[in-house]
Image (cartoon, rainbow, N blue to C red; front, top):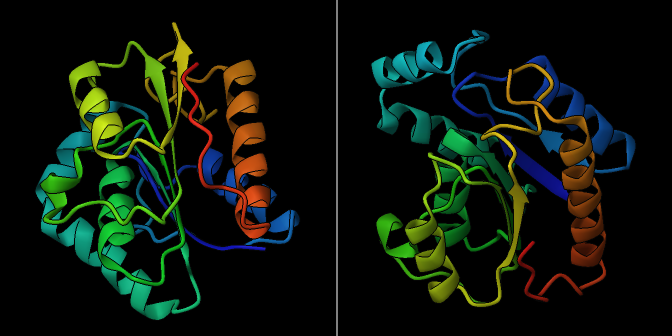
Length: 199
């Protein structure tokens, strides 16, 4: 079983993400979900982004770093949209991280000051199209990390996995969770490295 750090999106640590964390715990994983918003959540994405801007990118990254220090056994990172940045940063810079899942966001590795550690499996999930994860950016990630598993969810909205926000799509969310569960099982079995996927 894995020990995960789960980083929330710009709406905050919603009931939907907390429910996902609980389902992962029920499967036997240990899940830590640091809250960069100290309990606040936002129904509107614009309000959430405004709050994130007030806090500042550095402060959000510091919350992630503090969580990594508080939970030294955590070796898998999962990030949703805004939380994809901290997850990807830790995957590139924290040597104990053995797997990374990004949902709704991914950046070329050089944005985080290093190359991708090629032995670290990466799974990416994005709506298609998604104004917050543009095709050029995603293609750059695929070129830099050719073993990444990339799943595109046609005609879904940005945060389709979270029932607490307007973007939610139950069928796509179920498919995401099935793929995440399968990836975690393969990671534990040493088989998560890479079959390339583009759907």
